[in-house]
Length: 140
Length: 318
Image (tube, rainbow over all chains, first blue to last red; front, side, top):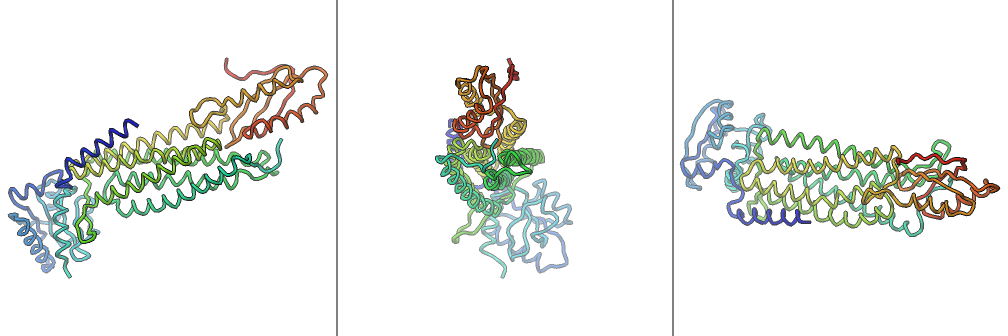
């Protein structure tokens, strides 16, 4: 029974020492974006209405969270690679839920029931903030 | 030799009935747990491991229920010793599944940990409020551990009374289920703290406990099938019933010396007793009477051969 009590105390400690600001980012993406800027990769695509909606969505998000933005444009593979190395915070490209990049990136919930935004895997605070915003700004 | 269908003693019949009812409740409850866990699992390795563990823990309950429909059938031409071993087979099946899954989960979690995969956990909109899915997972984990623990505590004494190993394993695993639940919760809280490794580490811890259970049970089941001497299911010590039965036989007035050996067939014991009889005994009659007395001695001593010999062969280690 002693181990259980110890484990319980540990759980309680973890819980109370961190109940604010939960979940956190392992790589502090959201905190860093606040300090410097939100780095957004954009895949140049022909379907520009989707991309421009996504760009607009993120700009409004940045405005609400009081973040600077920094857009770069490159091909999909290069952008995902940068995302994996935490050199970008978000990648826009009109991606769908069942994208082939699924195992390499984290995804937000779809903003229109179909399309999602990519974020670095496991950056759960950033994801929380993004999803909260997306929930309130669903595309009809 | 017994040819009638096996019946538990009167005082144990309601216990078996209760055990069966508890196993049905367990099955229904586990089914809801497995569905709920699957729905909220997300990309957490610890949740996946705990989920598989819960799905797997339905196997002992199912095998117990199937076996308890078969074990007391009458011996027939094909199965002349009856069907008691069905419990041992159920026990083996359950332990193989547990052991295999423990191995799989250990490798899977270790790979996840080595690849340094960061688990992504999103949010859900509940009652107009954005909630981190981690909290929902923790709620489901609480649902998956507390009732299981209670069911385990209820089943444990029944398993001991019925000398039923599959029931005991099931009860014991469920009693220990809260460990899995807590480990998984710690993993989820760790993710929330920004420790991406906490999740896979918790999963690794869970898989090791599954593996340990699986190994112990597998060893036990195989040894049972190899006709090991009967052991208590609680503390793995030799059942003193064997010695008691031997002394009981020795106490008969026509018996000079005796040596008993038994093996477990599911809940009951089969075996033989070598007897050196006093000269001038009407042996066939004495044996018939002796068998009757032995059967009445304890319900676990089920099928025994009394064997008159000139010299007792001792097979036990000195």
